[in-house]
Amino acid sequence: MIKYNLKCNNNHNFDSWFSTSQDYEKLKKKKLLSCPECNSPKIQKSIMSPNLSYNKSKEKDKKNAKFYKELKTKIKSLQKYIEKNCDNVGENFAHEARKIHYDDKKSRGIYGTASSEQMKELAEEGIEVSSIPWAGKKEH
Image (cartoon, rainbow, N blue to C red; front, top):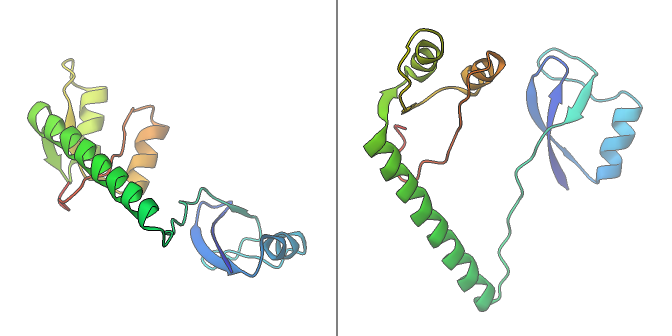
């Protein structure tokens, strides 16, 4: 079984399972796929995150554990830098980003939370924003 992240032409995202990738292509060609939200038959696969599986090999498990530990250390280091050098605007991130972009003459670094829709709108307005993983803290 294969799980695909799908998106319709109205930007609705949803997941669906298929026996094989060929089954997905057959159903799409026969126009048997549709968006569960708006019923649009114009469906395409969207970017998917990989499904990581762990090998039973102890050596490979050790390498993976080391990699993830180093990655977490780098993410935490980046978090500390951001917390020290930027203003936490919490859930007001989209508003503050627009304010800096359109109104403020003085640029400053900010961080906080924004929905994927808000991030998309900011990008469409030409406001440069980035999303990073935040290890260990849900409020950011």
